[in-house]
Image (cartoon, one colour):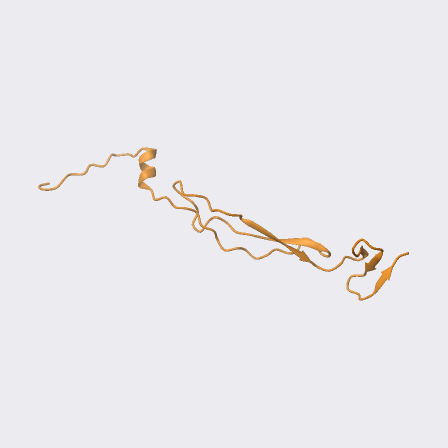
Length: 103
């Protein structure tokens, strides 16, 4: 080759050289999934949803996603049958407007 430099590439690359040739990709969060069902059929419970660090996944030494991959929130499906209200002797029957008080 005249008036140009010849470039010779090695037949193999070391791990460090491959790392330097690869693009570093930091992880990104997926969208949040749907909220799950309430953990309780009556009374106080929790709902959960999650996301993954796959949009894109970290590669070539890129950073993992920052933050939580799971969230919870309280849910309440009404008082349970025979549940004491506020620590008193008053009870509410689920699905009913009737109250009764034990003595």
